[in-house]
Image (tube, helix red, strand yellow):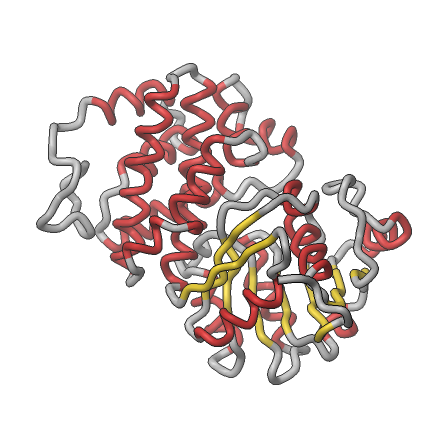
Length: 350
């Protein structure tokens, strides 16, 4: 699909970090007037003057259709779609603020990943609590790094919504010659994949930083995918979703490339940094750190065995060395790789 010759209905993007900026740029490339908002009005003014996000995405100039808007109400006015690109811990707060201003008929979508720690809810469940059923909702997810989207490199991702027509409309809206969106109605599966992969990417960084090698990394990815799938199916997802872009694709990307903040966080921890020092050095939100708690709580609530996630949690929050966790995982009782009876709900271990 090529960009339209004339601007289409406005898109409001809330969150001007690296990923929010990249998605705003992509919607503008695809032919939309885009308004980019954040709470930091001074930083927005600098972006508007420089016509780029010099802090997070300096090599990606803003298309003409992209403008910055410091006033939330003006950013939302007349928008056909609202895209939230905020950390999971801020999702409910921003959504609640938006609910008072959003116009009837506006579609709500987000690129937020992770369970809400206090409630154990996925983002779409939080959205329904805050918004009710009056607006269409969707999530954007999949194997994407902001820098590469900003650079216009070929990219694919998933748009998931309970409303197939809304998912299709969003996929059309964001797609261009070098950006392809696929649709799904399995919002539970897509969101579960996005939450769990961040935790596993921290684990991959820890393993690689400690020199455990390629064999360990691929074992973590493969068995981590099995854990992701078990949790997702227990929550009502379709198993095939986890073999797609928002499952296996996103997992491999974040576990193997150092553009991933979660992987870099694990590498820094393996080098001796404390979690606080590693977070300061990265300088952006590392979703996998709080997600380790949230995902483990969800697994325990659902009675799902996730020994890799549990091991990563022990290293992050209980001070157990990663080498001890790996040893414990490798010495678990021998079992079949695939449990044909029931591998979705079990407390028997892996």
